[in-house]
Length: 272
Image (cartoon, rainbow, N blue to C red; front, side, top):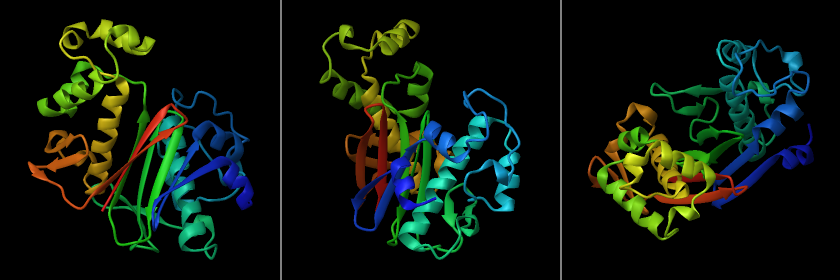
């Protein structure tokens, strides 16, 4: 598959020197790379068995194929494939420069789940996916990175808000949301539905979904940045605007980049 074809499927961002960020539409990836499989509605189906012949180009090793076939849900399989595909093509284009076949580029995981490249341990990577999009970031300099993507129009339930954010964070999100709207008439249909389901909580707190998800993507990106993921307590990380506190201490020398993807998804990148 030539580079022009890939560029039509993969979008690239270059937020800083030595940092590359690629993202792609997962249904488009499925259509182009796994055309022989009927994978419509992949988010709700059980896992299926894949063979090397199912892929338009070979990018998985036999060991990776075995791992893929061990997942029980098709959603997990497709998201895992999309992340692998993005990272391997980034390695080939920006690190290895085409010397290694895609199926020989090896991704592994540290003890707490952070991915890394076996052949290029000094290159840091982060992978994320949500809904119809997958994204991956790579840094060729000795820096840590973390990446997260989420839908921008989602307003979560009270249980999530209470679990994920401190009281100071909730107040900060609400303050930012007040700048966006003055009445519930400005909310989307999905947000109105959520408000009606959670009226007790949202009668006292008024949020815009974009502010909530912006906040959440930065928090999850930071959890990946420190290599802990969800092994760390969510409230150990506190985001107040562009300042990050970890276990009560302000985190210094860290950069945050936010991107709007197709006016539907929010993507946050942290590095330092």
